[in-house]
Image (cartoon, rainbow, N blue to C red; front, side, top):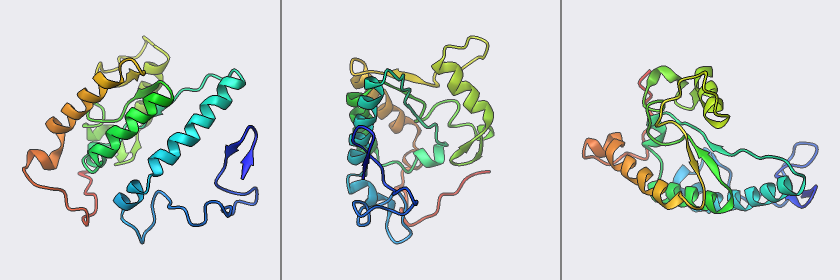
Length: 186
């Protein structure tokens, strides 16, 4: 269904899925591997929807701030590197964004998380401080990179190097077991 300026929504007003998404893969389905869903071009679809959202915001003079979520390192360890890099590159072609994901002093410190995907309020404050240049908080230098079309290639090179340096299973010279559950060390 389309509402307001052609922006596509995945649910009808009553909350049910519309016919245009009934056969479409979702982010997590107990019957499918996450890698299958990613390879079904969900990232590409998300970028197209984001492109529409960016255009809508520009049309209505709305400042849109995009940032990547700072997942805990155990989640990052399971990212599909090539697909993730391609997504970040695609994102930079749609809009500039703040990159808080990846390995950094925040995402590698267990004290910053309740669970692998739920960071503490202090991390939220650091994100806001970086985005809005709040000098009252001491934001680690490695946390939050402003990515544009102009610096995307250099940033993605740094992300690739970070993957090589920090991936837990690569450092142990073993491959991740896609069948295994994430084991969070806290």
